[in-house]
Length: 104
Image 1 (spheres, rainbow, N blue to C red):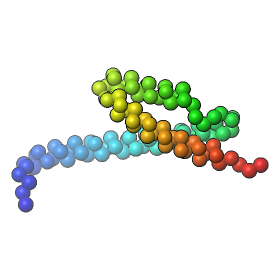
Image 2 (cartoon, rainbow, N blue to C red):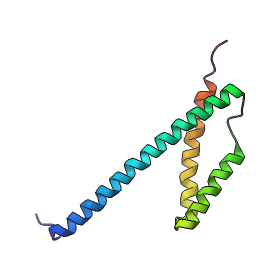
Image 3 (cartoon, helix red, strand yellow):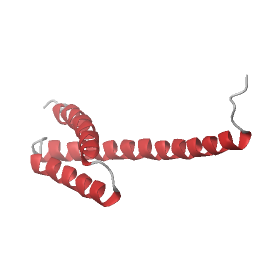
Image 4 (cartoon, one colour):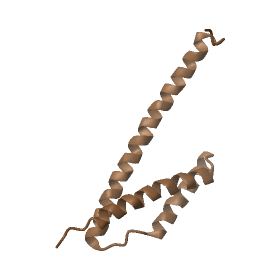
């Protein structure tokens, strides 16, 4: 069954999707690296008695994302929602690490 599209048209779409797949792999790797750093931060907080939640830090992360969005034409509410998801996961991980205190 023919799609009605010339081969060169779909070749271009395949190439663009391949580029998108590569970017997605980089994005996922960046998220994994970010979460790895968050584990190290949680370990530091646990060792030094630093409270898990740092509202001023959350605000700074959101402000930086908003500035980036404004500079690059990315919707601020989208970035805010994205970082809310990332921060929620970070807090969950930090709770696990900080709550995992050694017996003694």
